[in-house]
Structures are given as C-alpha cells and as structure tokens.
Length: 441
Image 1 (cartoon, helix red, strand yellow):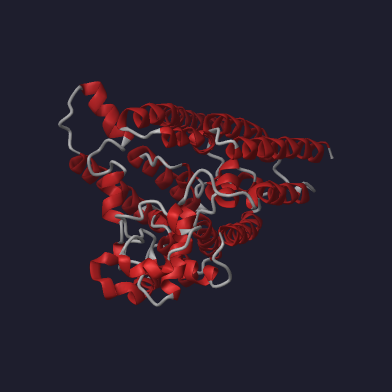
Image 2: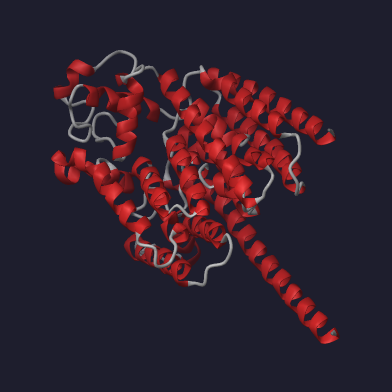
C-alpha cells in the first residue's frame, strides 16, 4: 500500500510538471521547458527506483497504467512544439493518397502545388530541398493513418496507440521473464516518451511497438515472427536493425530469410524512383555532421584533445562500423545462455551511442524497452538528460552541439566505465567466494 501511495504522489508531481511544461511551450519559453523536463526526469528516476527495488509483483500496476495514460492525455491535444516532423508525416500520406510516390518530389515541387494547404504545408521542414527520409513502412502508416484524418491530433493519437501496443507487449514479455509487471513504468512514465509521442507525435512510437513484438517473439522462440517484426521496425526507423545480431539464434535460417524478404517487400512498391527510395538520407548524413565529423562527439573530442583537425570522419566511421560488426559477430558466435540476447542487445545499444552520439532526444526512447529488463544505470542517465539537446533549437552550430554533447556523453561514458569496473569486481568476488566455498568442502 505504501508503495502505491508513493507512486501516486510521484505521478501527481509528473502530471503537474506536464502542465507546467505545456504552459512554457505555449508561451514559447524553450529553456524553462527544458528545465521542467529535466526535473521530470529526476522524479521519474525516483519512481523507477521504487519499482526496481521490488523483486515480486505487487498491486501497483493499475497506478502505473493510469498515470501513464493521464500523462499523455494532458498534452495530446496541444500542438507539437519541439519538432515539426509530424507535418511531413501528414504530407507524405496526402501525397500517396493522390497516387504519387512520396520519394519522387520535394514538397515545394510545382507538381504537388494542388495538394498544398494553409495548415500542413507551411509547417513542413526542409520542404524546399529535402525529399522525404522516412522508410517504406513508415510511409504505409502515414497513408493509412491520414485516410482516417489528415489532422496532427489524429496522427499523435495513433502514435499513442502504438505506445499502447508496446506497453501490452512489454507486459507479456516481463511475464515470460518472471519480472514484475510494474516495470512497464520504466517505459511508460519516462518524460521522453510522453513529450516525444503524445507531444510531438514522432513515428518512432510505431517502430518501438514493432520492436517490442520482436523482443517478445525472440523470448518465445518464434524466429519467423521475430524476423518480420524486426524488419518492420527497421522499415519504420532504421536503427532497430542494430539488434539483429543479438536477436539471432545461431544456425537459425528462418529469421534472416524472413527479415530480408520483409525488407525487400517493404521497398518494392516504391522502387519506381530507383535509388531515390532512400530519400533525404544521404543529405541528412551530411546535414547532421556525420559525414564531416562535427556531429560525432567522440571524433570531435579526439580532435579537440589532440589538436589534430585532419582526422577524417570517413576513417572514424569505418572504424565504428567495424567495431559494431565485430561486436555483432561475437554475439552471434559466443555460447548462448539464458536471456543472453537481452544483455547482448543492451551492449550493442551502449556501444552504438558511444560511437555515433545521436543528437535528437527522440533517438533515446527506444532503449527504454531494454531497460525494463536490464536496468542499466548509464542508459537511465542518457535518456533522462537527453532533453538538454533541445537547446540546439535556439541555434545549432558545431560549438554549441559539442558543448551539449559533452554534458550528455562525457558523464555517460564515465558511468559506463564505472559500471564495467563494478561488474568486473563483482564477478571476481563471486568467483573467489565460489572457490573459497569449494576449498572449504
């Protein structure tokens, strides 16, 4: 009973902060909003700590789910503030409904003039030069959702519905693993998921839902369903493909075949534009500083410390790709143990963030699925602190981004190091204890 009361109290605080944050957004006060979101993150961490203390199921699940719904309802009907991506979603759905391949034209192309309006079109970012960047299944979702309504509120509501699917699958997965259902709070109460999906309507919610099904399928040993849903998540946002080596079972042929077949089937309807089916992805890589290197924190930090500005991003990205591929190969070839795929997935995610350092907050939401099963402290910090990256909305340049990334990724790296040392010491003590017990017998 006491824990339910404590969670209810913390949930009320989060709701009050939600309303305060929405007020700051309405007044166009970005910095006060970020401060409120960071306070929300601290309150959330207390709630997560309360949940993680319990090893057995309790009667707090209803409290968790009720407040998860209320947190989203308080901002669902507010206009998006932190991102305008959702207007591109609606536009892409409208373009497809007119029988036009969404990868063919930029929104400002005269061929699409007849689709313009005064509400959606003027708010599309990069409309003058960028083709859509979203993969095929995301496009299919945009088309299907906008056939119900071409309103932003409806798109946001559908993203919240995908979150409901993700939470339902998480509950089933936690039950399979023998973990308390209340751990769904780790995903459902995080201010990042609330603001990004109920607030901004990011399509990542659909990728998270499919990824949650893939994780459940992996635990149930349904390789074909794992392949389909992991490919589906990848066809919404590309990053879930990172988990393929961790979810793969050695010598299984179904998952990779189904994964590749699903990917091919997803791209097939849009191939009339040839390589244009990748949309603005190459331009995005350039725009976000991945090609030049200014957007990669580890590379910029090495350049700053060494004073060597000639270190190329091409060489760095080649090394980063090699590290990820080598880690994936090791996960595939190592002897499997019970639930090792969960730890392997977490390892891949941590290494990915260290090497690539994304700088949009919504890219930190999907690992919350894994945190419900493996409460990895560094990732808790990274997701809670990611709101500071919204300061780039005040004016993004290489210097500001490096400063913000230092605040975000330097503590993250130190926490990863401390956690690794602590785990090694714990394993050593356990080994010595086992050896001592054996010698005593």
